[in-house]
Image 1 (tube, one colour):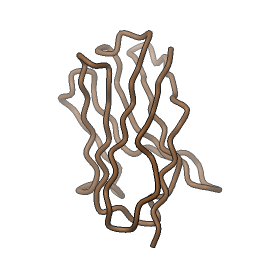
Image 2 (image 1 turned 180 degrees about the vertical axis):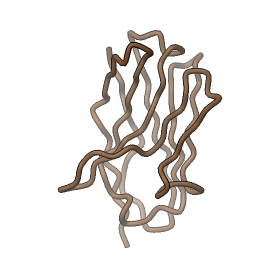
Image 3 (image 1 turned 120 degrees about the horizontal axis):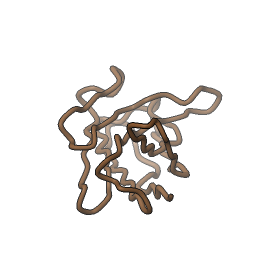
Amino acid sequence: VQLQASGGGLVQAGGSLRLSCTASEIIFSTYVMGWYRQAPGKQRELVSTITSDGNIINYSDFVKGRFTISRDNAKNTVDLQMTSLKPEDTAVYYCNARNRLRVAYWGQGTLVTVSS
């Protein structure tokens, strides 16, 4: 199983980035997909999740109104559109896949750095 995340980089505060995660070797349409992040010296935290059919989406309070998660089951991808970025959004962002049996997989992470 492979979750390949991309799209990270350096951006100024107020800017935007779009992260993408492509999954392989799983039945993508049966997995809840999520984005998590881990800032230096902090624990990994949930950013957003989207159900297998895309009908239920959750966001952590600190990204509501700024980030948008979406998925394309035909392409096995889940994206995270990030706008109005803040320096505190700086972190490594990880893609996560979880099925009904609670089997979970993690991607390798992509670094997002927001400069002030």
